[in-house]
Structure formats: C-alpha cells, structure tokens
Image (tube, rainbow, N blue to C red):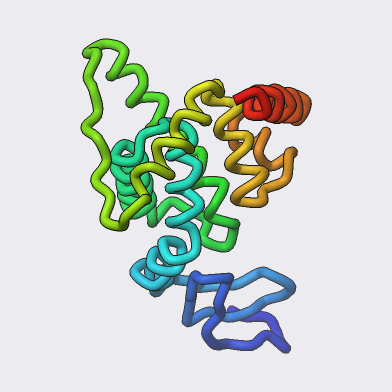
Length: 189
C-alpha cells in the first residue's frame, strides 16, 4: 500500500519511460513497469547525422585508404545499431563510435596482414580530387597509425588530447608525443 502523500502516475528517466507507478519518496517507486525504451530509429539517426563525418575522418587517417574507411565507418554504425538496446544514449556517442571503429580497423589490419590483400583504388567524382587525395595519402603514409589518428582527432575533429588518449587507449603524454613526431615528419615531407 502506498504511503500517505505519495503520488501515482507515469515517470520518465532520460529516454526510458516507466509507469504506471506510485512514487514513495525521492527516486523510490512502487509497481514500476517498463513501457518503452526510447525511439532507437531517431536516436540512431541523430548519432549518424552528428558523427558520420568524424568517424570517417578518423578511420581514413587510421587506414589511409578511402574505401576501407568507408567500409569501416559503415561497420561501425552497423555495430551501433546492433548494440542499440545496450547503449546509454544519454552519454556522448562519438567516443563509443571511435573506439568501435578503431577496433574494427585493428581487426582489418590483422586480416590484411594474414592475406596480404591490396585495396582497390578509390573512385573520385570531381576533377583534381584524386590528385589532392594522393597528396594527402602520401603525406599521411609517413605517419604511424597512432600519429595519423592523433592528428585527425585533435586537429581536424577537435577532440582534446585527454579524450583522444581515452579513445586510443593510451596516455595523454603518448598522444602529445605522437602529435610532435607527426608535426616533425609532416614538416619534412
């Protein structure tokens, strides 16, 4: 039986709606039953629209291969969709996506090492785009994966050194060191 002064109704926690229930006190509910868990289509679309370009840029820097970056970006968002019911949608999605993409890229590198596959040349639609991409690709080729990813995350995506370190599962000092080495190598190129 609910205590005197309690209220009955529906309650929402972030994107989870629960009810009907009776509020017994601060954060305590009786008879709570989950009704629905957000609209995953909308949440997924918001995450895709907000972060596709950033994920692609990071994976392009990581792989230095346009087609592979597109494939890995697609796989990253497919992984997000498959894990949609286990993700805390109230947390920023970009770190989760970048970690998932990095893991997929690492798996790809391992597979390539085993099979010695050669990726096809990227297809470009606009005049001069191929030449510009080849210039960028050759400049990035002198960088290690950690250096490339650190440069893209901090310089292009605008993520802090600490957040970049967390995403790459390393220390902020290692990211700063990689950035310094990258600047030196790119200055010589």
